[in-house]
Image 1 (cartoon, rainbow, N blue to C red):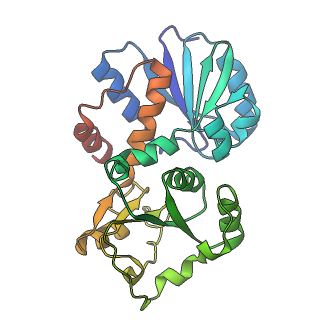
Image 2 (cartoon, rainbow, N blue to C red):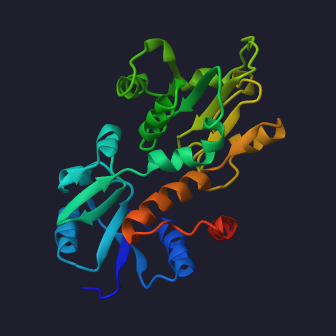
Length: 284
């Protein structure tokens, strides 16, 4: 057992995770005598992992990545209501003798758009691409902040299931392929309207084809948010910038969700005074 307090990230595979870089950066800046590491945990070993960590007084918790975000829910003692609603846990911490599961993707996604959400709007609309692991946290966060949401997906059954989690509406799901082709839809006056386009798929990630989106489907002055962070500027964001639209890259959500977890692990807010240096470290 470790004498130094530590947290970690678990997954299978795990070598790609940027969580150790983020948390060690903050631990150094905060001057905390603690560690953060990565642990390769296979699905069949997940229950053994938690049984061992329960007995380690130095363990402060773990982040959970693919493919364990749902499987861990059956192995812990209590699940935060927000994580229960999302249906996935990405952070587990020991609290008063129990293992408690949280989901920090919700808060992490919202963090970079908080200045927009603080404004008054006549109407808020989001076009969300994808139905995967992060999509439910994203759509629930947007729904809770007054957005009307269109879900674009390859599998309409999954889109339907996702909408049922907050507001069933067959009119607000669409095949993702439709958005690859031009439309002559005449957008009305968007004054006072907040339009958001969000990619939650892996399309545009290194080694993957780009998201096929014809920008005739994108309202004027929309904000384009891509949760992919490798590469930092996806083809979607590059094209949006070329058209003069506001963009948000995936590192914002990654750092935001990590900050929420850091505070649970180590009992103090993450030192956010050097986010630019952290971003440079992550993309360097």
